[in-house]
Image (cartoon, rainbow, N blue to C red):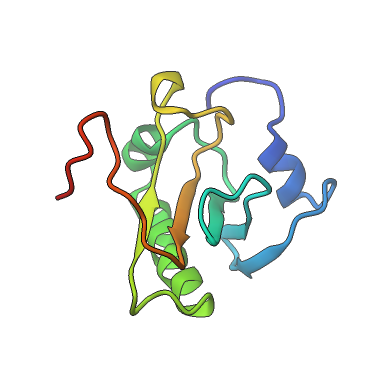
Length: 122
């Protein structure tokens, strides 16, 4: 596990900091992002800390699967699974990662623009 200091997400998981929880299992916690970038913006966080998605994938592919399945569950709960949603993992500073505890952003509930420098969709 990277970095010794406790992250904001660990404090949310421990219920030391309040959050608007949308979904929870034994392995993940999903809660609304306080700085929402779309009508629906929920963070899915594994309860075990890994720095980023690459570290998680290398260490525990099953837990990565739990995060992705939780993102699907969040989309269903939020009513956006049919209209479409985006799941984003930011990895390190240039990608915008500011909390170094891996987390998936589930975004939707409105037409989302293309992303990246050139705005190309895929």
